[in-house]
Image 1 (cartoon, rainbow, N blue to C red):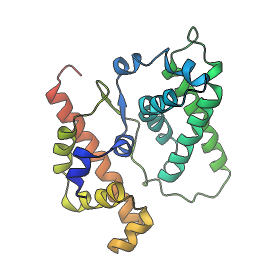
Image 2 (tube, helix red, strand yellow):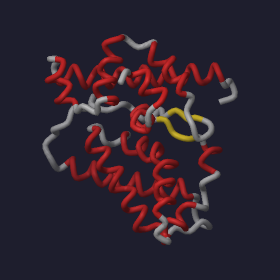
Image 3 (cartoon, rainbow, N blue to C red):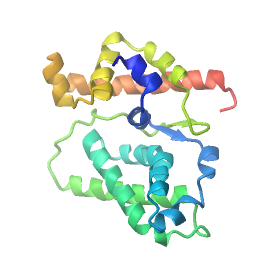
Length: 212
């Protein structure tokens, strides 16, 4: 599958996360005060919706402290497992659902960082995008045509790496074997490509919706 078809027609949640796209406050407010009480009752569908709604928020928080993609994904899984287990402790009179989940995400991320500080540095700081400037997107969906318009501005070699990583699901090491590039080069090009794509998407989104 070509990258264009993947962006326009497939599930691109992983791409949302990698770009640091989060729902705007207005779009999250519809879910606030409604999902966690259902999750606390063991409602699996509510949990799936919770992940869909708050996944980008959790990912952006995690990536501020965890640079390696695999570690970040594992931490996100741990965070939502804790959300599932502790949903019954949520009190809507104390905080919004996004705040409750965000606190769990920050605490888990800090815990991971503290553990790593006691270990030798094994990861490359350039292996993940900078998520501190996450893009707020109004509504629950992303304009796929706009996203592809942004990606078209990137160098062809960068889009090829995106295809291998996001469409085919290859790890950095598998991309090295496929392309013959050095591991550091693969990580740097993916990271730089995501940063550039995020900036382009933000610019295009603001041009289309000046009030955002």
